[in-house]
Length: 266
Image (cartoon, rainbow, N blue to C red; front, side, top):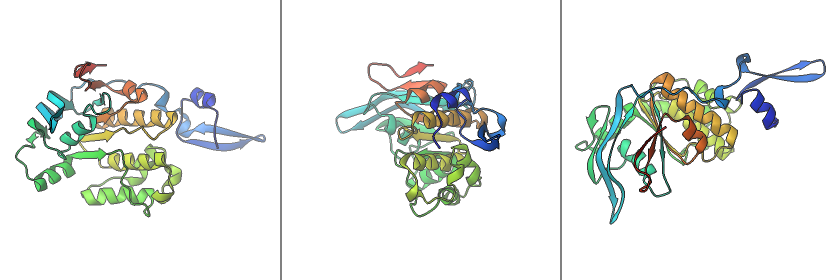
């Protein structure tokens, strides 16, 4: 059932509601009787947590093209960082460097206090499995598994404990727990991938364009969810994004545009 945007806004943009009959009318109420916080900006938390990952004078070149040039930056637990910049400025590359999926052309990347420079591929995979959750632009779900089974599979492969159902409820997929991924919309599949990452409670969560396939209301809910993951769990959340809704929730902004400089405080 589609609800008017004005009514949703007045109720605080709840992601889940209950319905009850009352005198021939249907009355909808936000779950727990309180509106979702999606209409408001989650209070910013100072970047006072430990540095979970860092770039030190990092350069990244592809042939004669340089996308990152001497970038130094630390990413703190408890902070949501929005990485912005025009297409081709290196946003996705930066996420891959932090995850150890790519190597810098110069400089060093550290994760959980460990330099990635001398690690083997197996060592990198082990470090990534223990500390990093990555959500790419392609969800990478198993189509014949349900939403819940996809999250459970992600936890199993990492050897991690987590609540798959609760993670899916948090991203607004409570009605779709047992729906095969192939029958979900593109936006719903993206939310399953986000739930799979959140369920691991990794030290650093890297997300590439998390709201690109979502409408405005779901984009707002996802942005609030990422801010809460940072502030309430102490996770370092780093998102590559063009979305102003997500940028508004960020504690810090990293601008990769060549003409804009690198670090821009919010």
